[in-house]
Image (tube, rainbow, N blue to C red; front, side):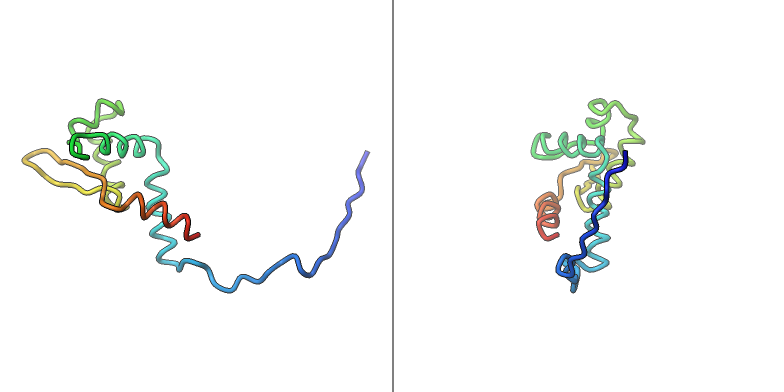
Length: 114
């Protein structure tokens, strides 16, 4: 049995969008940040860093909790750094990471802007 389909034309149903709230470059920047946050391992790494003493963590302390090799964790950290979510400081042979000041607030604010 086929149900009848009713099509209603309403000229007032569609408003014209005048301008986007974000430009192309800003949209790409926001997408880059959320792409970095789109991986559960990277979210866990951010959580570990935030919970670290002084709000930072050595790369050597991040591998075991996520169960990945140092090379793989370094790759994830590189993506987080490129997205502006973490800062990196070299101390001898070890890299220390901290959540970039204001980065998470800026990410949340970009969602509210949309």
